[in-house]
Every structure is written in C-alpha cells, then in structure tokens.
Length: 427
Image 1 (tube, one colour):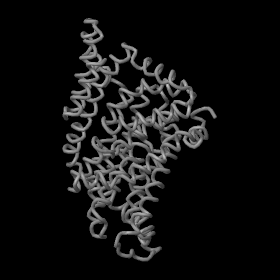
Image 2: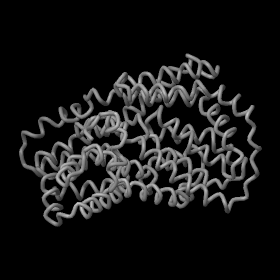
Image 3: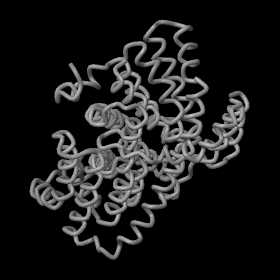
Image 4: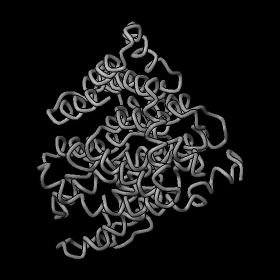
C-alpha cells in the first residue's frame, strides 16, 4: 500500500482529476498485492460501483436543481423571507440561510443550493452594501445545508456504502441541519454589526401575506418531499422524481419555466451526473483493493490498540476527517474512509446512524474548506469573487460548523431524536 499511497498523494497534489487519482492508486495497489488474477476484475469493479439502485436518485436531484434555477422559485422565496425578516439588521443575510434550508429540502446538493443562491442573492446583497467576500462566504456556507437537511445525496451514498437505513439518515439529518443554520445565524449577528447596512423596510403584514401566497407553490415542494419520506410514501429515488415534477409545476405556476428548456437542462444534468458516477466507479477500485488487503482492519486495530477511550477515539476520527476533508473530494473520501471508520465507530458503541450523520456532516463541511472546497470554487466561479477572499471570509462559518458537529458527536440523543420518535430506529 506504500507505493499506492505515495502515488495517491502525489497525483492529488499535482492536480490530477480525482477520478483518475482514485483509479491509478487502486490499480497500483492491486499490483502491490501481487495477485495478477485481480487485474481481470478491475472493469467489473468500476461498473459495480456505479450499478447501485440507491444511486438512481442522484440525477433526479441534479435535474431538480437545474429546473429550480430556471423557474424563478428562489426569487419568490426571497421576496417572502425578506417581507418577514427584512426589517431586521442583516435581514437579507438571515434570509440567505433560511432560503438555503428550504432549497436543501428539495435539492440535496451543496453545489446546487450555492449556485442558485449566487444567481439571486449576490446582486441583492451587493445593492444592500454587504462586503462581497462576506456575501460569497455566507452563500457557500449556506450551501452545505443542502446535503444535510433531507433529502440528501450524501446520505444516500453513505447508505449504499454502509447498508445503514437511508430513511433513518434522512430523519437524523434534520436537527443537525437546523442547528448549523442557527450557528450561521449567530455568525451573521456578530458580523453585520460592523457593516454599514441600510435600514430595512418596516414590517408590513399585508406585504407579508401577499408574498406568502405568491411563495406558496415553492414552499409546498419541500413539505411534500420531506413529508413523503417521513411518512414512508416515497423512497429516496421517488422523492427525487417528485422533486423534479414539483419544481416543474412551481416553474409553470410562476410562468418562468418552458418545456423547451428541458433539453439543455438534461444535457447539463447528464454531464454533472456522469462526473459523480465516474468518481464513484473508479473509487470503488481502490475501496475494493483496500478491502481485500484488509487495510480497514489494520487501521481499526491500530486505533483501538492505541486507546480504549471512546471520547479520545471520537476526537481522533474527527481530527482525521478534518485533514481528509481539506485535501480530498468528499465522494472520494467517503469511498475510502467509510469501510475504515464505521467498524471503529460501532466497536466503541456509536450507533451507525449517529456515526453516519457526523461522518457525512464533517465531509460536507469540507466542501467549503480550502484547498479542495468544491462549493467555494462553484461560488467563486459564479459570483466572480476572488477565491482567496472567500477562503478567508468563510473561516468563521467553518469554525462554527465544526463546533456544532463536534458537540453533536457527543450528543447522540439529539441526533437520534427524530428517528427514534418516528420509530425508524430503536429507542
């Protein structure tokens, strides 16, 4: 594994695409194992990684994001949230977090949420004299709520890798998502004090009622999706399909969506889906090679042999995830480290659902941590804000997210409250 590991780090640091990094490292590791027969199954392992029914929801969520982006849904949500909270200092910033939480319940993707918010909120925040780096950092950070509040592509993938109930993960993600949103609101509260912001319009109940009615089609979409999942009406894949249909209907109601948009939407969605699935396919090669070489068992034995303190082991795993998240794309990290860390977590008595939430949230935060924070790149590219400025401005949000997640790692009853309440997992 030494040569494969060194090659993995070298190719990663030199900017080789992550799919190629994973594939090269996996093939080299198979050569290191020394069994030529294993080379005959590489292609099979690539396709086996992608040929998973649970992953079929991913293209649906990507299409839903594209439809939402074209349908003017976010603008209606912004008008409603601003009528409710716009009179508060920093109201537009709080609105960004609230809208991100609503979109998260539809899209399940950080990049989809961030790209939609960039298009709508950056111009508004610029007009209201918010510093551009704060605006970009806020939107990128709010984007990470997408894979945490259900439905979530990240939770689906963890479920596929671990055989943990995806419905339990979805329900367990609700409270952490809300707590992260509240944490970001605290950052906003202290940040806006030093900005020269204009006063918002006084609260107007008539305007609030009018914008609420206008936003109702958009607000109903997440209620249908999350309610359907909680009630056992939808599977994750079905919820993805419903999100596409609901987004199209909302776009038709707002008279912004045209069916002539669908070919371009499908092309963009196919390209994005292909990118994810190629990473998954090649990542499965190295995941498989590590499994047959018993690397996860060796790491588990090393950590459990070092200490038997549950607290210390959790801190070690969190520390590893911080480092991994800063250096590796989240999907690739999940492929490699799920089989390594899940057995350690269960060995120290962590519920697999609780561990899955903490694991996924830590890797989701990595989407806004330099140097490999994909959502930072997306926000920078769309908004035109310097990546260096964003990387500095996002620090308070990242530290807050880590603080919330560290706390939740030691508060399993908080994370597991809703799944237990619904009877999805045992109390």
